[in-house]
Each structure stands twice: as structure tokens, then as C-alpha cells.
Length: 106
Image (cartoon, rainbow, N blue to C red; front, side, top):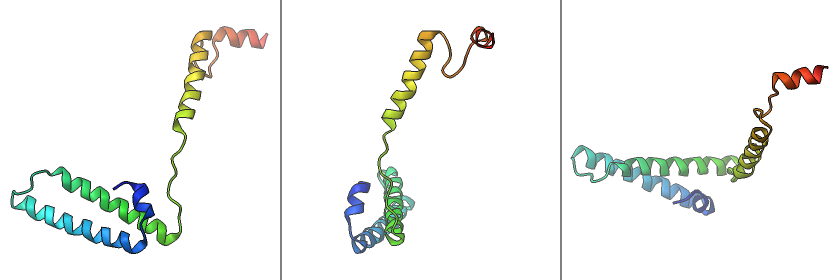
């Protein structure tokens, strides 16, 4: 279940999901101890799901808004543009050469 889907759930539904995830974990651990568990990755996935549920439950209790996706791509493109421009000029991004420093001081 994705975070956006979890955020749409009511507090009661989230609590139900939390209890189900905890029951699954107990079941998986028991199966693992009996060597019956087919995929140990399911334990990790269930733990992560439980963590998401608990985090969102806490956010709702405290009235905190969840994280919103940020525009990482735009910041990355801007920094790449500076580097490309500096390379074209033959300098490092944000740094000047000794010759440029000497010319600026004169």
C-alpha cells in the first residue's frame, strides 16, 4: 500500500491495518522459526508497511501534514547547467583560476 493511499484512510482503518500488519509479522516469524516461510523478504516488507502506518498515524494524531514531493529535478538541472557553463569557460564551477584572480586584482 502506498503512502498516498494510507493518508486517505481514516484513523480507525489505519489502526486496523496496524493490527493486521503486527499479526502478519508474528505469523511470519513463527513460519520462519519452523522453516516454512518461503520468502524472508516478506518480513522486511511487512515491517516497512507497519512503519509507514505508524508514522502516518502519528502525523494524524499530532495534526502534522505529510511530506510533499519536492522538485528535485529542477534543482539538479540548475546545478548541472552551472557546471556545463563553467566547463565551457575552462574553469571549475564557482571557482576562479589564478590568472583570473591576478587580472581582477590589477
